Amino acid sequence: MLVGVITIPYLISSLGVEAFGVLTLVWALIGYFSLFDFGLGRALTQQIATKQSLGLISDIPRVIKTGLVFTALTGLLGGGVLFGLAPKLSQSWLNVSADLQNDTLNSLLIAAFGIPFTTLTTGLRGVLEGFEDFKIVNILRIILGVANFGLPVLAILLFGQSLEYAVASLIIARLLVFMFHLVLVNKKIGDKWMRIRLSVGDFKGVAGFGFWMTVSNVISPLMVTADRFFISAVVGAVSVAYYTVPFEVLVRILIIPGALTVALFPKITALINIDAAAAKYLYLKSLRIVAVVLAPIVLITIACSHFGLSIWIGEDFADKSWLVMAILVFGIGFNGMAQVPYAAIQAAGNVRITALIHVFELIFYIPLLFASLKMFGINGAACAWVIRVLVDFLILQHFAGNIFKKPIYEHAA
Image (cartoon, rainbow, N blue to C red; front, side, top):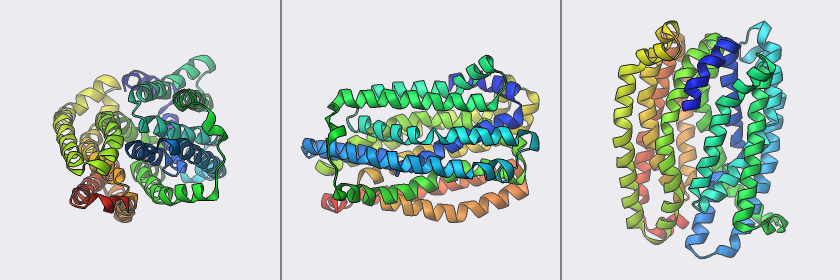
């Protein structure tokens, strides 16, 4: 986040507002197409934590091999999909100006090569989190986060004001982070898991869990990033930056609840299997902590949005963006709290519930987003997003409460 605060003004001034808007779309696409891990990152965490709590240690290497082979294949599929869609996205769908269309096309083609590394890294991270190795996982997250903002700046300094080189630097970062994760997993359990022979039954088990995870992983990032693509199509790519800059800053606040729920997920997975009362206590305590931490951050951000953007980027940018920031931060608060019930539901193995919730939300969110954008511009898009995440939190909270009312054997079923 700190690197982003420093580098975003430089990237905007070097690339221009529209090209920077395209760069933020590439960031979003790389993140969105990581859904082609079929939810196996979180599934691996859940499976490894469960097998450790039940003493089934010998099953873990096969689980890891199955999950990673699956994510490799689906990552290649995701890269191919983005590669195939790149011409349409750059030439018409994103409403990019004619002068920037060729650069956008090349950037999307380059980004497609990063999708397999992104999905495999998600799977490997899930393995490390299943073993609760959070220190090294977060060190690698820091490296990737810094690279996400820092390497495009370095590429511009070395090769000039080129959108393609900025995007290529992002793919190089993902390749290196993937290699680091692979080395760490091999150090943890050895490399014998690579030589385990898999069966059709292994893939069926993975696919069964992964199907509902995939439904959720397709829809959830779509609802997070759809607004900027609608803005580009309806208002124009130049307006994307006025929306995505405050959003990209505010979404870093979710580092706080994200850090808690990443650690909560394998812990509550194990407790649900052996001590449901302790799992419920941990859940409620986590929810209170997130609420207490986020409330003052939300209030301070609302009060200081115009002043902060003026100091950081400039008065003109702040005039067009401060209200978006003030609106979005409400949603960030609800979204941060929603991570706790979301983690609890999936820790219990109820991935079908979260998937169906997201399907329901998508049905009402997309029309709401389009109508709000048409009537109120980017401020309306921000309001639609806040309404969506509030509904998401309330529904997830309801279903999470039901988890702790059921006997433990029902979760296993």
